[in-house]
Length: 143
Picture 1: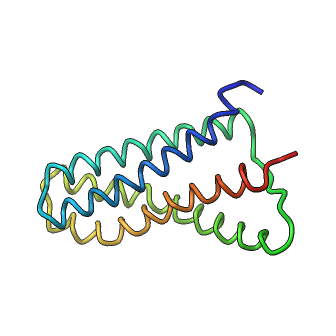
Picture 2 (picture 1 turned 90 degrees about the vertical axis):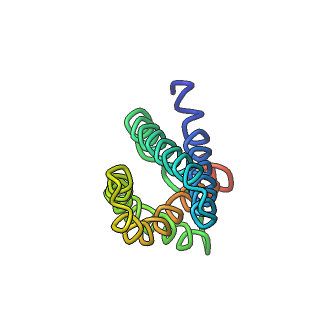
């Protein structure tokens, strides 16, 4: 297995964590009317999430799917997190693009309306992405 494949899961988890921190910071900035900071954080979160997606697709192409080896109570917990993460990850891509597009076009009233829905979904996807990594690669790694 190529060396890059060994590190991609960790890199992807770091990108997800970075995105989550940037989303929280960006939200805090906009609440305090620090628009430039908000803009920088949200564009950076979009960049981190885009890099994650590229890394994830590369990992799946090079290494295939990783099978979960945990047994007992953790198995339904893991799959509940994974399924909700996967479904919402597919939904957040168009939501984030729409939200970002409205902001970049200066449609701030429409941006705010969709951002109220996008932020919690995007944050959930970023945080659960880290949880999936921890459970799959740290707590129950393939033997």
